[in-house]
Image (cartoon, rainbow, N blue to C red; front, side, top):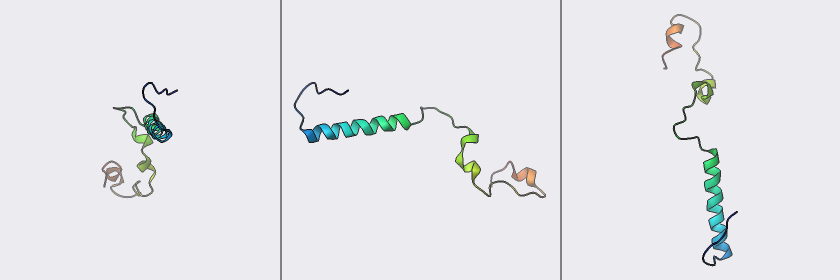
Length: 67
């Protein structure tokens, strides 16, 4: 609940203020905590086709080194 303690805002000013508060609250709810480390297993780039090496000579080397 938001309460106006001092002053007499117009309906437009109150609406603008509430819009800013709602946007900031939504951004805070979806943001990752500071210092959070994402696991490589949750990396969406891991599922991109063409990133896995094809069978053949040198596959073990390509499976480790990016490139």
